[in-house]
Amino acid sequence: MKFKKYLGEAQKLNWKDKKSGRANYSEDADEFAKKLEGVMKKYFPKSFTQAKFSKSIAPSITMRFALGKSNSEWTNGIIQNDPLFHIWFIHDLYEGDVPEKIKIELTTGGHIGVFDWEDAKGTKHKGPGFDFKFPKIGWRNKKGTPDQILKHFDNYFKKMKDAAKKYKNSREFELTKKKI
Image (cartoon, rainbow, N blue to C red; front, side, top):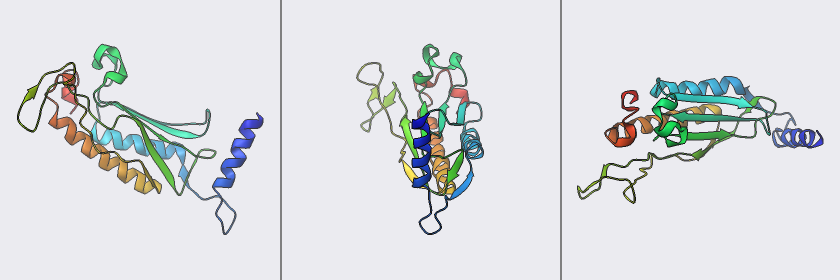
């Protein structure tokens, strides 16, 4: 309990405005999580999307995305085998409020895993083995206001949709091709 109290006090100190000494918050973390999930659903409405605020160890928002909606659409029923599986975090939220400046970090994903692909010379590769390819989608961790983070997240999902369309004929998309 003492550690939790100490953590809360430390977070309060990090959030104080230097002039007024008061913390600056822009909105509720649950509401911001709903906005992030809305961005995911905008581009992939039939896919697994999850964005939720948690106070467990330290207040944070966790976002998870997979192209398949359930384990019947993931290879061997494992979500991590989804070709577009991603996890993001937003840390340093205090008592359920989103500050004026936040950082969004990608911990899993940032690429598409494909077996069947064609290189620049026109050679067709059919995995598995060393022919497995991870085309990058172009994520960069970002610091900014909640509105800037939403725009960054939206742009990334636009790029992800385009990349998924490019590789949708690959074997990994057999179960989820109709979602692209």
